[in-house]
Image (cartoon, rainbow, N blue to C red):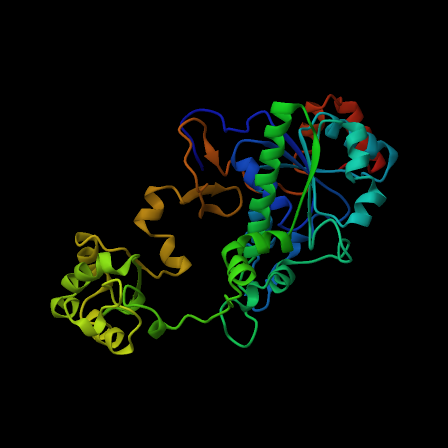
Amino acid sequence: MSRSNGTKGPLAGVTIIEYGVFHAGPGAAAILGDLGADVIKIESAGGDPVRFWTQVGKTDLSCPSTGQSIMFDVSNRNKKGIWLDIKSPRGRAVFERLVSRADVFLTNLRKTTKEKLKLDYESIRKIAPNIIHANVSGYGPEGPFADMGAFDPMGQARSGMMFLHGAGMPVLIHLAILDQATAICLSHAILAALFCRERHGLGQEVHTSLLGAGLWLLYANVIMKGVLDRDPGVSWDRYENSPLRNSYQCADGVWLIGVHHPESKYWKAFCKATGQEQLSGDARFSGDNGGPGPCRDLIETFDKVMARKTSHEWMQLFVENGLMFAPVQTVGDVLGDPQVLENGYVVEFEHPSMGRVKIPGYPAHFSQGGVGTRSAGPRMGEHTDSVLRDFGYTDAEIEQMKTEGVIR
């Protein structure tokens, strides 16, 4: 289901040809598909390996109805799928026809593989001089690791992300968090390149990586260390934070977290909402700015107070008093959160094999243009015939190429 107002998506008319695998690259094309772009995914040989990525540790990612990994839909929604042997002369000719009429070519294969298959920028620009050639790598286009493969955990590791929690052991954030951040980063770069071409007539190559996206995601943390020389990898300790920047467990077991800056502005309101007015005037708990600083005794006092009411009761009181708290939810909680549903951040989608399911909606609203998931990830080669017809091939030519093994 897309969030539609009856108009086409903002990228309607933009054509993207993708020859990529897993998520960090293909995920960018899926995002642009959310915005209305026409995305054609080319697979060859056994297809995109993400189709068969059904096990991560003890987590089973397989769809009950198909046995295929749910991650394929995550990475390939909104796409038309074709199977094409681009190594054969006739398959290469088909590929070049598709690319010659495209706005964007996207790949995340290794540098040497792209050169071998003639999918690198210099080869592609000979076919389509003004094309946007979009790339994802593990560690960037330059340097000793430019041709090394990588997956999400390796990008998290090298970017510093896995030590941000401040514990002694590295901790991985599951699942595909950095992959998704990289996909967002690449979609952002592609949009900028399309705008540049619209304004200045310039096609170009754009490139991002797991490492680059990871560091960009950690922008404030990198500045903290690089400018202030202060270690951002400090574990969250409730007692080292003020009561107004803290989390509390309520009578129903739900945690609430609040963040208020400056503390002095909200201190009296917090004390009033919690029935602890006497504390707001206690000089022991007021710092130089008139608000409370970190104090174990004070936080333990509020722990006891917060345990007297449910999270719903506290949220009502906090809203009435102009305080900013939020429930600490699981992903399962989010699927039923009325605020999430009202804004279309989670929507219902009619999947061809799984039925009606809940999926993330597009996170921005457009007053002009429908956005969001329009179709499920394609079956391997599902749209081969229809796409080739759209690009001028006759039924006889299509059948002949099937006989030759050029397409499926």
